[in-house]
Length: 346
Image 1 (cartoon, one colour):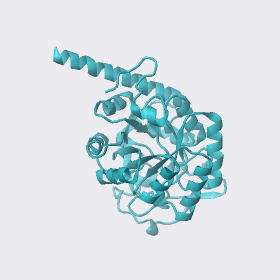
Image 2: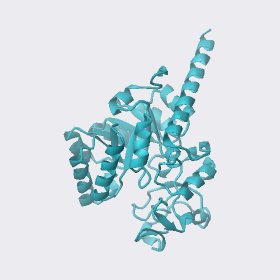
Image 3: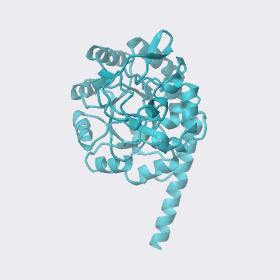
Image 4: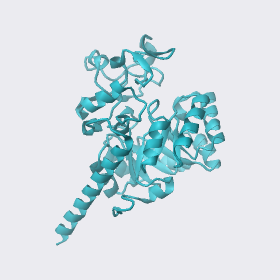
């Protein structure tokens, strides 16, 4: 367990590896984690990630350029090799390498050749996984950091175990630093992760509900209103992804219309009906698209991603304030743990 340092609270070896001050990582949420949020997290001492899943090289160039102008801190770009058409993935990675991106975050199935490609160029690799076996595969491929995703995560969910149960198992299976992720939003969550030997935590929902996130204000408001038990694991929002790719969302009219049949949906059998738009791009009912700042239409029926930690989010604040809250809460929790340990020894 780290000793909180008044000058740099909670600094751990992971911080030295990534170039951040506190072991709090921004999840690379597609559409939501744009340059403004990534820069705000990085400048506040956390680790920023750009969510560039299936985005064009042109947008990646715009986002990386803007991020570099807004912060001198290191960052990562998140892409998903297993869910991206090969030619686009090749172009995405080539673009990132040309731009001097220092690190990548990968997710879903491990593709060793992709990890090896960016490692050859000197990049760090963080790999989010949902099983112990995938953690071993990611480390074997050369990943520098393993992110253990528990079933409480918002958005696409690979893991099916509680986050701390999975984290403990992965800690026993790999030697790389392990970051806990999935339903974590508070200082108590960070303290618990550090006390069990994890290197830090990754947060998505906690940062979605910030001023700098690119999520639509409607989505942010629904997160603030929600409690953790109102989130649902479902594969009905699956258009654009393979069959069986489950997500965690806030319950809405689409979920209510399923009458409890939240899993087992085939994307090929779902109707293609445009219910919202980003400029001239239609957003389909049952697609994986979530409402962004630019989205208009039936936002309530879209995928409103949120993890089980949504219940701890009670307002929309700057990302720096969210980090400060988590750090303060973690320092307090760790201090209480140490006090309890001393009293126990006495």
